[in-house]
Image (cartoon, rainbow, N blue to C red; front, side):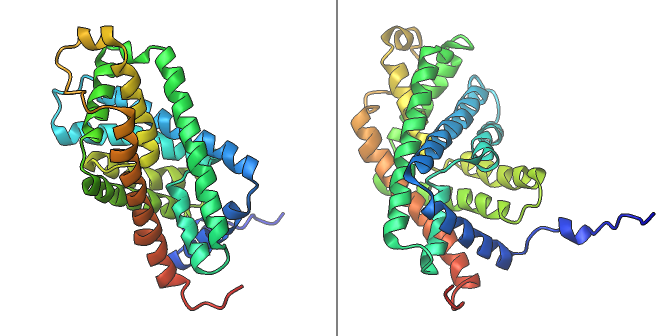
Length: 286
């Protein structure tokens, strides 16, 4: 009876050059996916990121007694659930799909297909996040903890809506650099545990640092807007921040637009384009 041969080399993480080739192949596959499947998976991604945001909001609620950094770290670890679900369960996330620029730069994906993917995925992410907001609001989860969850939701939304345009764009760039680095790291993974461990530190870091994620904000700010509309809740919690600037118009113009621009810069340029330049530039076109 022959002994089974175990080859530990098969468990080694993929090196960066092979990660770049894998990122390119994945980008080609994403860009070629049909519209219906792309949209359905994007709806799931919007919902998954919203679930991470719900977890993060709940963990942060009532945590004012903790040091600022510790509270932010715990919130970030909780929020990591969102990208773990996207990567492991399978979904199409606009910010992660900024890495398709690697396949585009190699001329394996056309500009039209790149923009088509981004547009469909962005719309699906909006739909999934807003649907989650609506269902959660109906469940009145914001009233849990004697209203602490709702207070935290309003605090988060008010802080995000008060960012300046350039500030929101810069914070968005740093955010998606970390998100795309998390996705990039998963391309080296050989197992589920590898993927989870690769995702948590970059995602926890962007949340702890206060960076801005467009898809997460599709949950955070609309949730705050719905809670703000519950006048009895707002009246019962007099220590809330100023909510006068928390409007749907400012959500789009002052947060979602600049953060989205920043996300594209951070993911597409600061990560995707740089790794394409280092590992794929000059390679013969396939």
